[in-house]
Image (cartoon, rainbow, N blue to C red):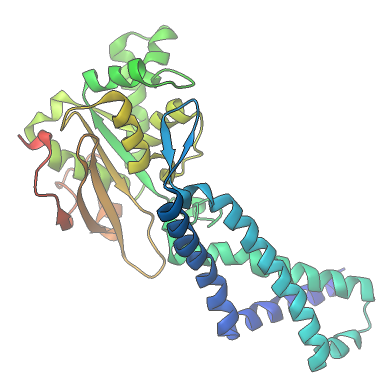
Length: 330
């Protein structure tokens, strides 16, 4: 058995090296889905407009609508490429060398097929490490590093009530669920604050809270701070922690139903850290105004900060700010 595993490892390693060294194949695997997404999605959106999903008055852009089909096409082309590589090995004589091995032909063929599976299973991990905005952190295997898109909310009590009154949803706000379970209001707030504390112990947590605290200023007491992952669960049923489920698209949909006032509902959202950068890109969203600020912070600055920010807010670099400031500033 150890010898058979050695054979498997050697064949898989050979396929990985060949995939990396064949730059046209490597970049083709990277660029092809992006071209499909840009060309086809933009073309359909320009020609056909938007799709609508009844009974909700929610318009879905075609780049979102065709993404599942693109995933299937990517897997189809990956399988075709792997099949063609078998033909290439046969023509170049590599297959003949492989067949001189004393191991059984069935095991060699199995190893060859598994090598293709491993290569294309690792591809999403590589893509997610470079362009995390296109790949879920689950597929990109970032959960073990705590490195995924995240968000925090600063919302007024009145705005939080609107979420229950104006949105068709699978369950009420978590604070309402806790009170229904018998928790007094102040105790329920403390329990729910544990989720914010949990986020603050992640590397991106201090940065997110710094963005919100900087925005609300001396009006901190007027807001309730919510961990967006848990808040989103009660709105869309489940999101498995992927921040792409509760970015500005969700906030825009909530705004169309609740009509929040400027400064009433603020969201600090951050993308996960790409492997080749030492910073994370964040955006500050006002539900009524859209994205009002973009910027970055060094991962080391946020990770070195204590959850309660005893040394002040995490330093940030603002790369863009909307002309009209948020209502929280006024």
